[in-house]
Picture (cartoon, rainbow, N blue to C red):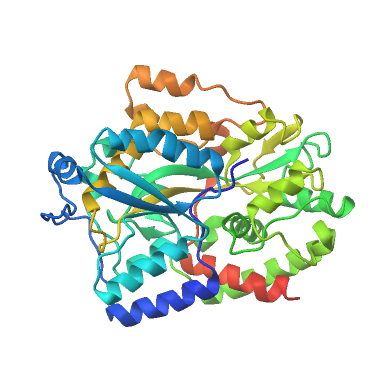
Length: 420
């Protein structure tokens, strides 16, 4: 199963260092609004998409993105690349392991005052926040993309990226919802009803459950899910970071996770480095349950025989965390027009349908905005019995915390759980 769900977050140390450097380089945080983007003879962003298409012809767009998902790589190079080629744009997928690699490069290029080889980044969360603080992102163009008409821009998770207003500084392209994946021959519906029942099952069946070490994107989500459950839900932590509220809430979480640790894989003496490692443990039958950000792709793994046919999904009673992935265009890109064309192609209903059908990634566009034929095509996509329908995943979706909460949880987990 693909493990790439939204772009990988920065490590806590890297994020802190980058944020400090960004503050030092800019002197202040510029509030980038959703106003018109500048145009230029070299193919900069424009509010006239016909002019953008004209400027983009002959350009190559270097798209920096996580490259560890073979199915997604096939979508990018086998579907998106030909679509762009037909418009006169060459797509070069630059595969990276961590999004921080691309953000650091953009920051260095800005500080050097040189054009960047980074034209677009698959991004969200902490990485977007860091770049916005450093005034790295081109803003204003999403409203000029023709296919943005298919997006519900009023959705909180689309208008805000981990609590930070997007303000036209990135274009959405994927929807992610978390879920618990489990082997129904090993766990019952009662076992997966809540975090409490899951932990109780884990204590009776030691070694059969684990999660990746934050700041792995999915590992961080798992810990945030446990944080919500331990402290009465997401609503209690809406808005800006509140240290007085966070500290006692986090202490309760660390206590609970330390009590769970001896029941985890390898007795919690070590945690998988990433989601791919967790999925391999499940595929090999070494664990029987794990949390995922890519529930739609589970059916493909079952179909291929990688996961057992008895694989099912559940949403724990606390709800599941939902967010969107975006494409950001650096101001230092010399090929902004081509990057905008890429962002528009990704939002095309046909592209979203291809991504949904082949990758199991839920659409970022609002299906109800499409015509009847297009809506029918999405509804006709066969759903594996192993996969929960989108409606079940979105019914109890919980918002993301602001990036300061996220980094505080990741740092605190390392100090108070991993190093204990």
